Amino acid sequence: MNSPAGREIDETDRLVALSDGVIAIAITLLVLEISVPTVPAGSSLSFLPELVAEQWHEFVGYALSFLVVGLYWILHRRVFVHVERHDRGVLWLNLFFLLLVAFVPYGTNLFINYPNQFGITFYAGVLALTGLCLALLWGYVSREDLLEEGLTSRTVLIQEARFLASPLVFILSMGVAVVDPSLAILTWTLLIPINAVLQSRLLESLERSA
Image 1: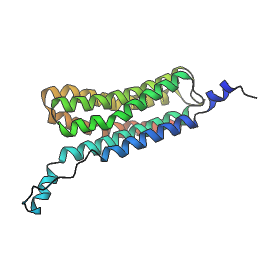
Image 2: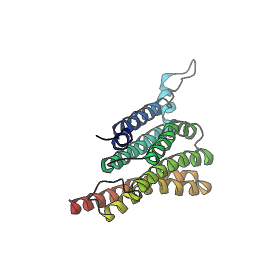
Image 3: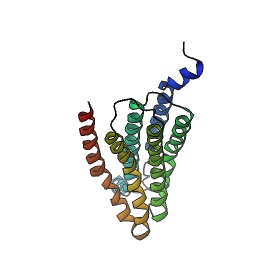
């Protein structure tokens, strides 16, 4: 019979359940940051579409945060699909990741209210740190031999590149924001083709190792 410590190491269901719950709450809180515009007293409701259009940065912040947190959830799920057991290092890295995920709504709110150089840099920094923590988690489980058998080194490296891709894009945007905040926002669109290419290569690698 396994010892209590052994059972704790093998059990990952509760860890994943906690993570899913925190991520779900963080995603839900994002929509609460979008304010409903107020039509000035005595003004016609015909101004409402214009007021909604002025909230473009709120919708961008919500959509981007939702998609990025969703991507991080997918990557987090992929970590624990391949993890057979965990140790205290995994627990603490995962808690730090959840700490940052829970902080994303604040970063989003700051960007929504102050879409300037500081707001963009702060927001991108939060998302970059969150992604880097997830990359550290993957690096840790692969280095400590906590992954399932059968994964090739090429698959592990492609997966690592995918974990690092999004944080590096946000770090790039932080530098661009110093020169042009609007261009910094546009750099976030690089997330789409980069992740698409890495996902394609990952699937190809998994098929070869199957």
